[in-house]
Image (spheres, rainbow, N blue to C red):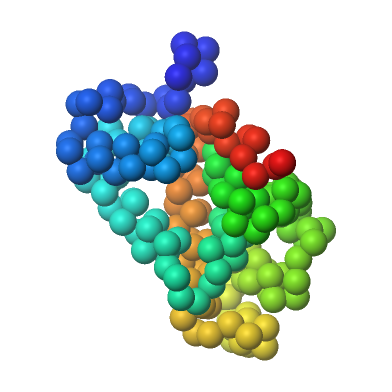
Length: 191
């Protein structure tokens, strides 16, 4: 964090001042990634909300069954692009590049997933995710039929919708907080 580019418009607590469970969670992420993602620090000023946010995030994103981890990140990057969330596009774009082993995919999907190099299955998934993110009130049987024809199970359809919905909330929270993406994210998975 610098004076000209703060992490968030809201208070950012010192790591040492945080409750032990939150400090340990942040330290574990830092050890794995080599840096502390700014969203962890920005959300840590509200410990109960931090715990709830990351518990649901992890429940959706860290499953080994159903959607692949790359598919989950595709949903996040596509919906975050639609919601104009710079933090999530940059941060999850880095994760997507790594999980998909494709240095181009995150930029393609964030700008316009319809023009990206995607499979038919991925297109069906993102069409539904977009509808959840922008027009959930219009979802009907035809949307679910398209996903079933693309080979998605009912649990996977739920996950697509839940991820798009969760990150819709996350995108709005991050935009409202003006949370800045870490510089480290920009180069991850590109070379």
